[in-house]
Image 1: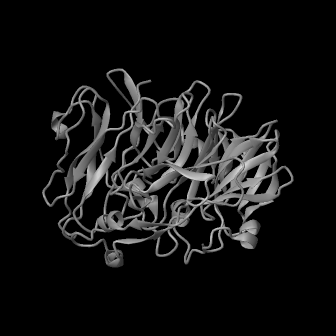
Image 2 (image 1 turned 90 degrees about the horizontal axis):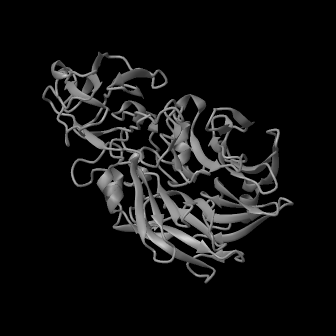
Image 3 (image 1 turned 45 degrees about the horizontal axis):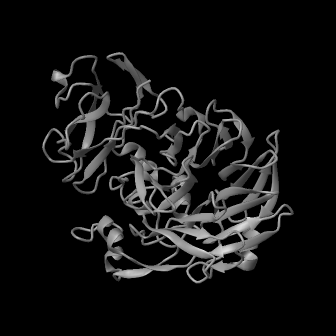
Length: 483
């Protein structure tokens, strides 16, 4: 896909470019200053390690955790060291026999490649995937490639989920590319995107045309993920492109002997799960269940509208392949793009993955992710629903001042408080609480440490929310972990 204009935050544009083939894409950088507050996990997580965007993580045989950071290359999540300089990298996977696989795509056409990373960090090109797409174009749509996920097959071979190509590819030890399977388009509902666009009332500015869509339109699958199951089969997850429906993303099971299989027609490619939303990654857990990650439970399009205030966060679901039962493991995770299990069986994920200064890789096991809502009103003071959770160290906006010179419904938050008291005014705050008042945007890369009741957390007060075109709710995200 050729973008019609340079976007101010290309990480967000890239994430959606395989999902939406036309129209303007919003810049998700606004999310970082529009009502989201992050309290990260403690010592093992460090946003300073990454340039972002982050698109893939993988556990290495030596116990380390590898991160595909498109801003610089492959990074060690434990110490921040750069293992291989490879700007534009989208995924990484350990390679049987030593070294790593890595895909690149974050850039112009022609940068879609598969690399082998040597022990000394050298990137050796194995295959030009854009050339293959240009010659073959297995899915009858636009000629475009976006290798988004890679898995090791052993024997010098690799599997690649091409999000823009809508297919699963295999690359052999000689660099020859073969089509394993092609995912089909599907007729899907437009109800979700119409709801997000405000079609039931006053449409979001610039999105009124969405309200004229028919009840159903075809959507491309957008293959975002591949994992090899304990049964040897290949499992592929799909995001589902425009119009970003909920409950329509599938997980496909593909036999390892499949070649040029047309999913939905060939018996070698069948649906195992079909009711997910915007699947972004797959990973088999130590118990053999397939873990399915969703970038946002309201769909990827929720991240593009306005300032991201309609996003509800991503989630992970552990699914039994035999019974087809799925259990939600964690939810409300902001901009989740990848998951992986480490050698201690802990589940990790990349969060805030496309937001500079906030992108991080953290353990998801036991992560506390309450969601609070601050409503913009014309009254001084922002209502909160529900109230603060009890017994937690939290970060919360507790008041707002409405600038009378701004138009109806526009709020500028100025007072930020963190502490333990469930209060709605700074005068009543106590027990180690702290109040900060400012009118300037503070960089998320400049954390302050506050100790409350012996628990220390790094917090970033996001200082300003403005230019909201109409009265809406703004979700405030809290991520808290005791040291």
